[in-house]
Each structure stands twice: as C-alpha cells, then as structure tokens.
Image 1 (tube, rainbow, N blue to C red):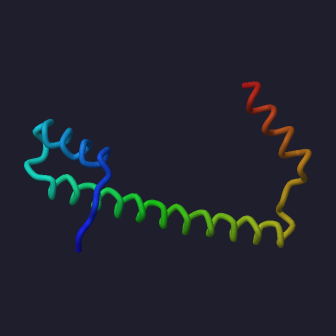
Image 2 (image 1 turned 90 degrees about the vertical axis):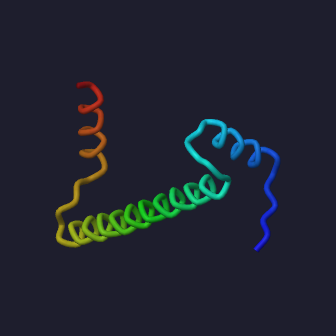
Length: 82
C-alpha cells in the first residue's frame, strides 16, 4: 500500500520526530492509528451506553414514570440558580 501525505501531515510527523519521543515515522503513524482505534472504541461504548439509556428512559415512560416538560424546565432553572 502506498499513501500520499499532505505537506502539513509530513510536517507534523517531522515535528514529532524532532521532539525525540519517536525514532521513526512508522512509530508516529502507528501511534496515530492506535489512538484512532482507542477513540473508536470509546465512541462505540458511548453509543452503546446512550442507546441503553434511551431504552431505559422509554421503558420508564411506558410505565408512566415520566415527568411533564414544565416540571423538567422548572428543575433545570432551579439547578442553574444554585
């Protein structure tokens, strides 16, 4: 596989190499991919958690445990005043 980098990306890699933290461009790129993978995992977990929270909230509403909008707004305004 061949990848063409933009000049800004090449400059970024060179900056990282000059910092002394990395000894090769491959190390910089490997770290970038590792961080991207980590970010994707966090996003997937956040998405799964959010979907579960929505499902829980909808189940609460189905059981009649919801609050009307005016009550929620009043609570939020009260919290902002604190």
